[in-house]
Length: 103
Image 1 (tube, rainbow, N blue to C red):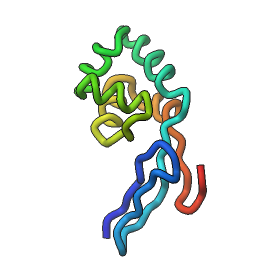
Image 2 (image 1 turned 180 degrees about the vertical axis):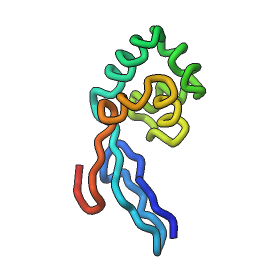
Image 3 (image 1 turned 90 degrees about the vertical axis):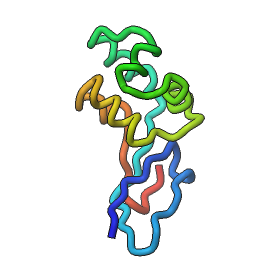
Image 4 (image 1 turned 60 degrees about the horizontal axis):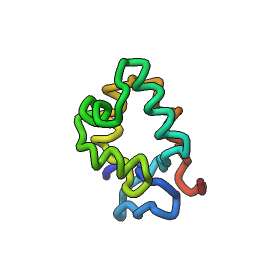
């Protein structure tokens, strides 16, 4: 059995886990996430979106797609953000919802 935390912008975007899989929570990008991520990065001396995407080790277009909510944040985006701005960023950028609770 695999355990998931679904990553999505809105609860209705969530794709169901497979049979026998356990979903512990859903993760949603907060509306203020783009501004907050830039603020946190600036405290590390990263002042442009291009430099932030490079520091996160993701493609700049992927960075912009996630922050514009065109694309859902994946593991690489989340790991890159954690790498750049540290653990203080998580609750500033994301909110979690228990399985079965709507956003």
